[in-house]
Image (cartoon, rainbow, N blue to C red; front, side):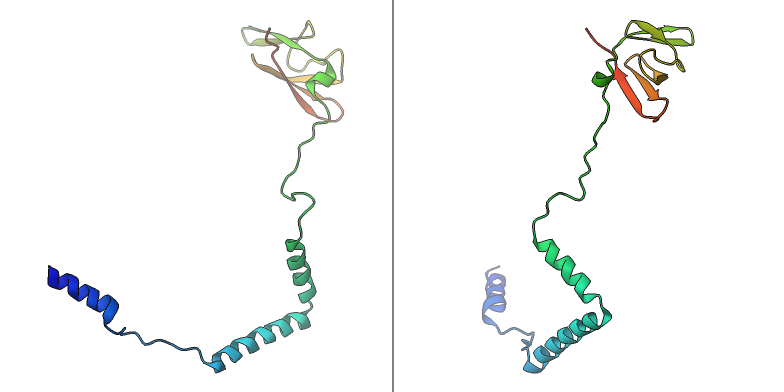
Length: 143
């Protein structure tokens, strides 16, 4: 066991490496520089150089806003309409929603606004505007 450990230490730290060390010649460095220069010239000639330069330059500056963030702005809310879904009735296959103390079925037009009842469930009612087609979900008012 001791012999194996000593051989391991010798082969890792003392013995010369069997792999030859590659040295970088001046010729290979100048070839790489020439390649970079040629690629830059091709980009300049093709006309795409200013575009790439502008993209790279704008990436370094801080952005005013996140281009991937789209804020959803609702132009109309349930509070704006003044509607309160206060009750739900289901008799057989017939569903009724009590909105502002008036009973409505699916397809009925609301008295206060230009909206039609599209869907009734025990937890919410979905109404849709006649003109703009905007859908609004009114949750059940729990007291």
